[in-house]
Image (cartoon, rainbow, N blue to C red; front, side):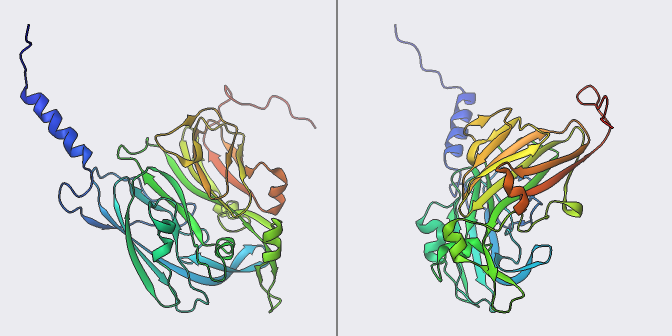
Length: 340
């Protein structure tokens, strides 16, 4: 018996929608051009609310400057936009990024950028090397959602020097469906510094010997010791759901990221979105030039300490504070008796 073929208007509409979704970029006309919102750590650009791709203009400038690495310690940083880490970039899967990279005229070295979110030679670095006072422009389409490292990869004097001196940051590629809503988002990046006294005997600069030996003097969050303490501490209120975008540039060592007194109920393993999710994790391992996204809900007020649980690194600066305020929750936690 022959079954009659039925094609309703509803079926046709679904078929058309599937075809549209299969061609997310360019097939529906030229996308709008927008300026990227860039933020300095620990702040995060706002979630993306648009539902179609855009051409996103990102502008970074390589700058070399002297800044504070730790109390009483000034360091000769190399940076993107004058901060270590560099700004956080947030785009949407299938966006086209128009990337402008300048090198400040006062720089002593050429710089470029390798974005791990790029599918192309050198992550873009093969086409964007800029001398002091110059600018390069290139574009790329972001295909894969996730949290990615970016860093300088200039061969002059060598790639490790550019990374070790502070030229790195994070780029988040949101999936087309977006990420679940949370109350607080923070950007934290861990890095090592290998130091020796400069010729002026006042500032510190990179020690290649210590870098080769993998013996850092400092291991810090967000570019300096104490960046996430005191007035720089992260904040939340009881009941808040918190998401931390965490990167580890290394340049040598992996990080054992942990928050004392909290459990990560959701971990986007190695920064992969739409991939493996781990649940109820105490400590998550983040490789050099890798990342993770962790989520948790804070139930009890107090100070929660961010650490690399390779615990001696606390003495080198790998420590931050999440300060939680709000009402006590004795059902979950209470002190019954303290020793005198």
